[in-house]
Image 1 (spheres, rainbow, N blue to C red):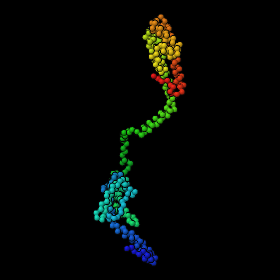
Image 2: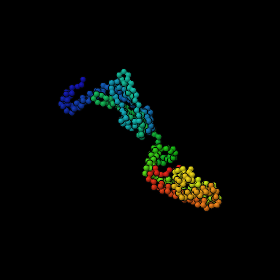
Image 3: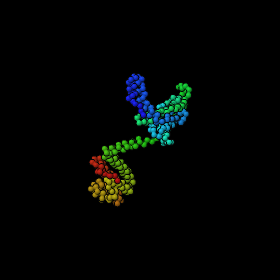
Length: 328
């Protein structure tokens, strides 16, 4: 039964300072009695090692025995474990024998303090109906292993400047980012300049093919001047037909003389040159009128130059890529 608080208050007013003291004492008495009713024993905490190095992990065992009806809370990760740092916790199930329960936990700690002796005392928190009572354990000490002994001076320090070889690792993230940026640049350049690139490539190809044809055809002319061979004439005509087939994008190399003349609308240079070549080949009169055969060579040469210039101009001023003559 709690005391009559009105009587205490009357005594406090009547007897002044002594009354105030008695009033304060009797106000705290119920709280002390409540703490005693719990019958909670002081928790026990101890290190599982006698000594520790800086940064080394060490386990701290902590347990509490209390009535099964008592509510006890252990320190969590928000608690200040100074001079230690909390690394992890390992809880164990509550074990109850009769009316007494035992709660235990193992804290994994580490310290970076250089104090030679370090201690730790953890509390438990007892939850009562009106308040929370904190009950600390007795502190447990642990020694810090001193790896450096004696007086430290710059002369006693030894430097280690040996370089370590670090294996180079492939940075996939940077390479993927760089590849993505490169692809975006290529797409942008193609969208902006793709048409011009196609035209310039086509003009470059036309120029290379024409230069190759001229060199080969001139070589046949020189060879004919020396030998006046019908085989040289046939080789020159074959070269000329193949070149025009590539230039026009058509199968001119399979055309007959009459079909070629029709294809080019009876162009005078083509008609005259092919007639003179047919006369030389089928009439076998090269030795009699070799000058006419030389004229036929130059007529085909001149016609090939004119067709190259026409196709080149069409390609240069083309309005869309679909109109660009395709290479065979």
